[in-house]
Length: 456
RNA sequence: GUGGAUGUAGUUCAGUUGGUUAGAAUGCUAGAUUGUGAUUCUGGAGGUCGCGGGUUCGAGCCCCGUCAUUCACCCCA
Image 1 (cartoon, rainbow, N blue to C red):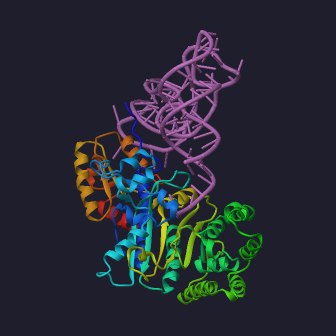
Image 2 (image 1 turned 60 degrees about the vertical axis):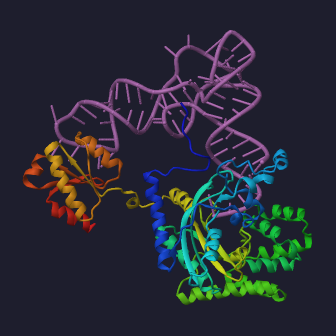
């Protein structure tokens, strides 16, 4: 007999996990809606041509490709096939792939429906994405993203509202110790200009991104091996190592970027976002101007964000930024977009570790009805119906079993209240109402039980 | 794609230099208690030691292979 398994890096979500996941998703959804975002869903599969080339070379390798149906080898060039190099034949045998993120499918949707869409268009999307890398801690092959993006406006209000939404989501989830790291791609470009690495921006960014992980020494080594000069590296690290308040950082960069148009623009944008936040009447708590934040995805062009929960070793739980020309890939140039993505799975892991899930998020039914024989069970059905009519999540124990077993069941399902019905209760209509957490019970009429539960 | 670690009851793990019948905790189940769970006491079920081969009189333990899991690197939510 073969033991059943599921593919590497995928998971089942049982009832207890689902309760917690939905708690996270509901909260995020609520915030997105509050800021005027509308839902969108796109297919799990996209045409491979839609996906390839959007995530860099590495990204292409991480795409799950779907084999064509039918006799998929028929069309393959025999010579290419004999070379045993899969890259030569993939485009022939696979024309679909699983989505890698939600942003690219969104861009595709916008381009396809540009006639119908009213811009600026604000959409949120909560769906699984797939990546074919090796799973490890906080890293799965199938995971959910919760994206909110705005396309069709350059306004920095969008950036400011992203910060607001992050704050609201974390507040709703009870996560207090976190930082929203913000940087701007133009600031990084300015940095690249200063050290004469205009041509080699991306390797500089990738190196910088690793700074907090592997330290200055190793980043220097790596960049040197990629052809950077000692001198220019000194310039870079002089800036990256600057410590101070946000205002001090801004002043410092302003003086450094006196000759760099790009650098100036980045600093100006960032200043404007801060100023907008101030106008909302929101404090700068949790906001951290991090010059060393780079983020991998190559399509970002403006502000970039990343959110980390402190004291949990799990990488970033949220990230995003502005991309000026994503739809350009699909023949619709000059549309600016900006978005944020929450990683539910990582949020889940972090909240689990910090024990932040409230008990209420795990409750299934509010009341369970326990009974002692056929007659009381039938009486209980009526009670259950009444409770449900009053909007109270109710279940009745379906078998005739010992009271012990029934209570045991309620206890395991974390059902907070149990109504016990025996012959006495049936006679005088006063039901035994038991609070499972406190272990107390009292005899009450059904109407007072209902008002008591609703009063909670 | 590269490197390391680990595979023993449902779960988490012990298991001596290779030696007879592989243990514990927890969970499951029945009872102590014929109307009371989470605490207590007693009994019971539960294992092809991942799989295949090798060394040996003898392998859970040593060797080789394989599969799975996991951690790290690259990259990323």
